Amino acid sequence: MDYISLMDKALEARKKSYSPYSHFCVGAALLCKNGKVYTGCNIENAAYTPTNCAERTAIFKAVSEGEREFEAIAIVGGKENEPGGFCVPCGVCRQVIAEFCDKDFKIVLGSADGITVYTLDDLLPHSFDKSNL
Ligand code: THU
Image 1 (tube, protein in one colour):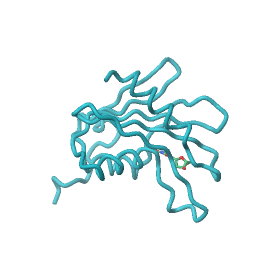
Image 2 (cartoon, helix red, strand yellow):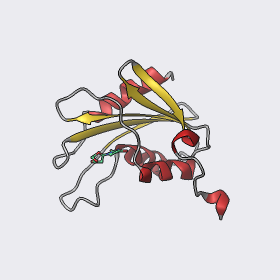
Image 3 (spheres, helix red, strand yellow):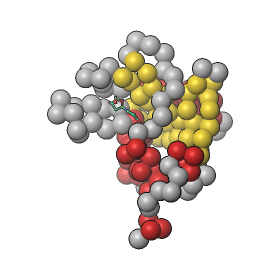
Image 4 (cartoon, helix red, strand yellow):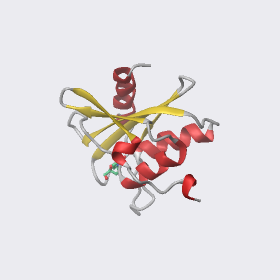
């Protein structure tokens, strides 16, 4: 699947965002190496800390279905009632991505002129991961 289509799925997933506290809606679409796509949105909580980011929702859905091989994730976010735009993954999500993905895993972000593609190594250099244990 091309990354524009993956971003379209992230935009669709963003519509499901449950974010009554921040009013910041995020969608993600995770492309497996076998071609399957798992989507996710952010899911907030009145106690705040149980909040799950869109990226982790997508990754945990995929891993819980037996997937372990990932090629790319598209992420889009923005304020409620505004079109989705550039939204970098938080540090926790970068660490979760690093658990399952190689350094050349692609992180596709929305931008004014479409998409910008980063690698995991761009966004989380010198990461602590299973190779350190
Ligand atoms: N959020 C994500 O879903 N992904 C990120 O990587 C950044 C932050 C969510 C968490 C929270 O529901 C809202 O955006 C504001 O932080």
